[in-house]
Image (tube, rainbow, N blue to C red):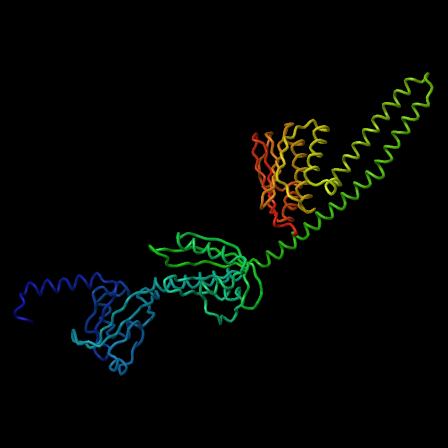
Length: 469
């Protein structure tokens, strides 16, 4: 004892040391070279469940830990061993994981210091994390998805095995980087994808985008990228997943191809029926009307009532012929090929106004020359939309606006009638499906806006660049 240090100061120091040891979660022991305890911390029960005096009866550290942890010769050489993971059984029989530090000392009559830290909860958390990571890996694999993580300041990027596979690198020979990722994105999508990712990085926001890529193996795949960006005043990290949509896109292409074939088959059947109505049934009805008119002229004047009835029948038969001709033209608008889209729509609106007492406010401006597919698409959508106004809106007024711009053709048909709920059920009616499919076939878009009591608006937009040159 240093005689210059007051006794009350030493006592305060010892009390502070005792309080510190008591409030530590670690257990501290000192032993001699034979492993006999020379010091046992008072809070040993926190980890082991044994009280200080009970541990004293165990006598040796190996009895408490279950075995000798270190080789005496090796410890003599190295002086200490850190972070020894060891599992022990407590007084209650519970298994606990410890992280133990062993060091040579000369204190409390001993030569070896053991510091034991309980890491059971940490080990359990690690096991849970590993299980979750394995589940995530299996889920990503099942979904044909891969993960990636980019540390922006260093540029280091990590790809999961599935991401390497998506990029045509199943053996993970390529070094991941943001530039390497962008190089694989198809040139037609590269600028858009880079802009999306950079915007997300600058804003620290989530992102989602779809694009095609050309893998290192030369295969083209469709991919959805989804994730988030993290900032800490400046870009810090981006992470997310890539989902392989190739099979989905192939299936969609097949469905769309089939849809196009069905539309074409439908048009061919319309043409056949129109010819049948016009060339066969229509001609026979017209001939019947003329024969009845001729027969009436041959009747004697004494049969005036019968003649009047024949005249009425001849007139009604002629009306039927006119209706058949109108149906034939609606099934296959031959005038569309002869006169063009504007004249065909104007004629159709005039016919509709006469036959259904319908007022159509018609505006057509700026139409360029159109190829047959685009013209037929717009005509059919106008036809279907106006028929829907007649059948469902409860109003006798509609507005049709057809506008050509430098880049696209826009058709809008609207009314102020009953409207409807744009639920999935109503959106999937045959008429709407047909209009959407026709628009898709010419690379366009169709939108339908409606609400009960607020009328309906149908808008079709077709890029003029989609036409063959």
